[in-house]
Image 1 (cartoon, rainbow, N blue to C red):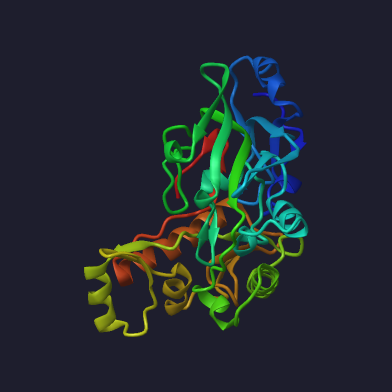
Image 2 (cartoon, helix red, strand yellow):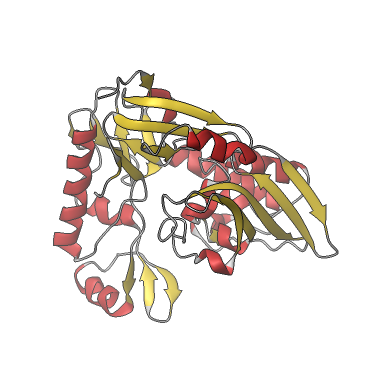
Length: 336
């Protein structure tokens, strides 16, 4: 077995002190094939900022860290077209847009990660999803060794999901994203704490979102975490109505005439998991959706606690909650 000498601790926000066989940086999308050919068909994993990825054990392959940068702006009469390198930091892009009076992303402020990760996850918050703004996603097809693009419809976006997490998972590297943002701005403020705002401008919404996220979510630089560990489950209206008979206060958000979204944090909180720990891994005392590493935790402890939460939620509510965070074992992605 090849020796493992490259630390992963600083490459994922959970901070487990693990190793990889190698770490390779790619600065230009056109150079991808040449650098990938050096791997001689050995395992590799494409990693952005590591804010939504947890390495559970030493990784036996090569970590590829793209550095595809740049922001190009084009105006039309009605829209802004924004072509952005996949490695740009997402929140810095939101700030850039605010500074240039381009509004629409403010509800998505302070979401960790890169621009390239945004379409993979179909990131969303406070009533807005990124699919609303995506015009095109550029990527490199690893098997066909060619650069391609998909329009928004072809990305097969769903709640925290896309073709990039499904059929194209592990087969492509996103190199850039083109966003289309209407010049006519409309506030989205029907979700959560934003309802408190009265006739806000975009900057008001931005400031409120930043404040709420900073109050609710722990800073990964102070305690290891990957933000929201679980997705909010979508359940049938009939199941929700039945649950209300036992849990009258169970909250929900409208999805369509047949389905509602239930906050996973509420489900977990009802079962008393806040503050519970297995070894160095804990359920945050103030935010049930966040699992943390106090610096002494292990991947096995994380799996134990996450599976305990998932199974207990199912046993109590008959609801399956899925991990939003990507879990990586020694040979690649693993299931919870």
